[in-house]
Image 1 (cartoon, rainbow, N blue to C red):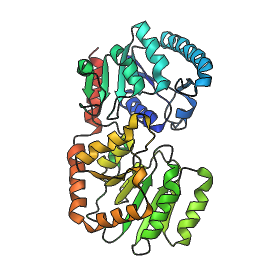
Image 2: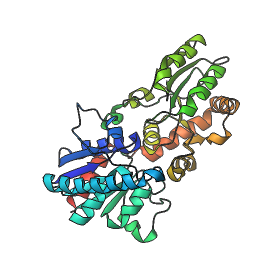
Image 3: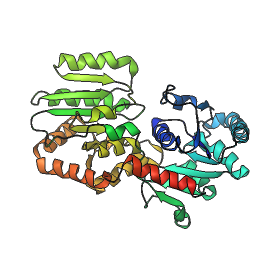
Image 4: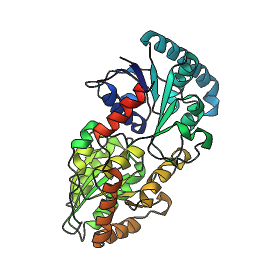
Length: 358
């Protein structure tokens, strides 16, 4: 049985797909998982065993660079030892600086590297390792900033969804006429920008509309504040900070407002829930904008850039969506067209075949 290490860490955008990879491979390979302290917040210890290895962010403040570079090389040394101790055959890296020490160590030890790139634009860490990997798992063939001479390494794969997502109820709403049921998602870390603005939007809409809301709040200390704010306006609400099983709730809503991480957009699309995408403008390489732009090109969603957003603009868009039933239904239809081939078995076969090729 081949031994596979999945290296991940940082945000949920890196960690959650690594858990899907783990579940796909665990019955056919001996799978190991490493993450950093931040990434461990997204992993349920009841279901996943992992080793904690904290990697310094070499892209952080310049004044910390000498210390961070020393710690970074120490992590490479630890990665060497990890590979030798576990006798790893394959490394799968889900991107980010957290995986770089393992990728560098794997290169020198001759261990095969498989990269994972869910975004529409090639990430910096993946770009750094690309020449030394055997394959890179991608959702798109036309990834931006991808070297033409290395495109032969791309293995196209359907978005990596967690196994439970495939069993979740899909959105069956035909329109939004009777009731607006809005899900507000800020990504794995929440979105501070969404907290006040979106609550004001919902309250304004509730004056003339029957509305329910489930709202992810960035600031944990203010969960009660926003719950009371909605309650005082007479709005049925559920407030949360992070919910790893949020996909279980998606079928209960008929519209989402969301940040544009690759995993969030893939889950919403698979569960047929039309969404307004608001890309995080400070994401590395503006990758959230490029992610959602691909869905816009397929007419699966609406997009609002943060710099252009006001309460009135969002309210006007939602009212227009509610009135234009044909457009809403067309977006649902287009979501189904680009996701219907995504099944646990299809993705599983692709991954197992890839491992067995070598």
